[in-house]
Length: 253
Length: 319
Image (cartoon, rainbow over all chains, first blue to last red; front, side, top):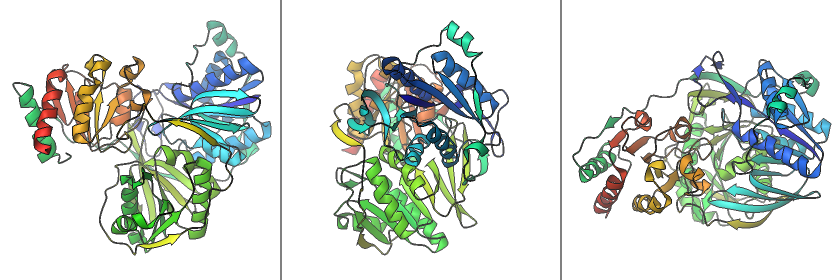
């Protein structure tokens, strides 16, 4: 089976973000692989370990994303492709999905796995858009995957619970927390990842229609309603103050 | 600008609140541009919902039977209604279902899409969508430059406003078409009585509740308020409750009117999931816990005393 795992590099949640006019100021930002994409990489490797084939990691972005591909190599993928875009609107899902779908189409992948969302834009769009562009089924929010030839049985999270679904490969999957426990790269893996080749593809080689999205502006988060600590002598006092505040001041209950 | 089309969502045969929120938002966009509001109801009994949707601005209520939820089936049906009605703007709930089919719809109708919008305004005849990015540490404003513009919108982010539309009921002949994903079974036993993503009030517990035996105390408060029960990552990782309750970066992103955090310290990953709540109540013994930095009302006290007192006080005033 030929497995493509989609890896997005995102700022670490703990890193501080300074919004500029149209993009964030990247200086001082610590970059990580979006956590859900780690589940995708792990699942790809596990499927290959069980039934053979090849796992290809793809990351789209400027040169810094090669670091994410090295981590994917260290975890155990077989090949890495960097779709190199520099002046890239990181928020534009249809542009991203078109470049990646064109790349994957040319490679005849049996399985495309990505995270259920990236933690920078939280859009949950790219993987399913790729499925639509490739005219293949998808399973979103996967918690468990089983292959029997080309037949696929998956458990996925739905509103209020879980669902078991069936479909056939080729297909796309979005990984939810719980699908697996991503491995830590071994020291040997990290060392050998440094020497492995990363293919570079340019947007003009893959072809995509121009971006449909326009960033009007970025801004800091809106200020929160000023908070205060309530003062009371006992639990009943806190309770009555809180009920009063929520009903008369906030008017939310 | 052309018409605005809303895809509504039902739960147990009733309109979800977001259906009215999005129809209200669509009315404002349509009024600014002279277009009509079409609200799609995925049901073969659209008449049942017509009065409610007319009251929040729907000019047409389009009933369509697409069968049980299937992301491909919904995408096929909704895309063909879009191709027929040719709206300029499409609003879809950023719900579990909306996330599952909206991406396919965008590609099918060659639209640009902004997902998880929390603000919709109009500038120069175009919708500007605001959304939190980088875990809510910044907000971005977007316009879409394609004939059809799709926005998926977060629950509780738009107000419901009463303004009558024409309220004409239509039936669409669109169908689910061919689908390749087959549902075998569903297990809804571990879930919430009230869905987290739609809830206007959430009562949430963290490590401070000490053990799973104390959920009933929070559930009692939640039931009193008609609230959903949320949980921090620590409690889910400890096996105290199922992951479907988890709020935060690796759980659900919620924007209720009121979020009551009990024994939650407020790690940045948790704040990423609930920081856009309108009012936040924090009950925690540790007055230095980071949750107090975002709390509208902070209670530095023992939650085991305050939560039952709060429940009984609410029971008194709410009857």
